[in-house]
Length: 315
Image (cartoon, rainbow, N blue to C red; front, side):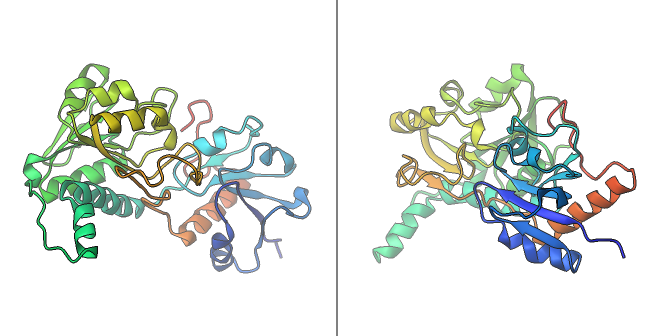
């Protein structure tokens, strides 16, 4: 009988115990290891990662697969000691679009409709209406028109918002009611019509620091920023001055350069910033386990695993 694979669950930022039962369900008898003591390192076949400690992956002499537990892999590529000969895969889950649509729609509506003020009124037992602005008079821009960006654009257009999207290259499959912009030459026109800006860009050397003071200045005064991309899209030092000056009225942030966000970080408790702990959308645990094991099976059969990353391009 073939020995079950040995899986190491690695993260420097979140508890990984929640995945252990999913791997057991996907393959009963599997050997799942986590924590500081992983046993004999030469036993480990798969490393499932979310911000793994730098240098850790290079310590497994017989590792066959490095698997991100989400679509992003920049947290793994940041490891200077990453064994670059190993297959590196990301998870692609069709259900993630539903979660992201729900989060982004909520983030847009809760600010546009003044829901924070209604919560305060409810707590104070005060019957007080906020100004009502029709969705068709509120312009939402989505930077990044991949699978998740297109899904969010479609959802917001269905609600009735004026939706525009920006991407590096032209898109021919835009949902009905969504206006497309592309390339550096059209970025200013895109930004000038964003009462709310949603960042869903991939993180690349070109998009790192995309959300900065110069970009904020090109938005309509009082714009709302939503970052559900990566923490490194945002130049954090530029956000607070933009809020203090009124150039931005609010920010809803779900991704941060350092996670968990330190308790003494100035974003906590800021009246114009809403922080959520990187939960905009999540992949089902069993999907992670099943895709990971299928990828290992493909590798052992000499086939290319699902959603393997081109390490020369980073995606």
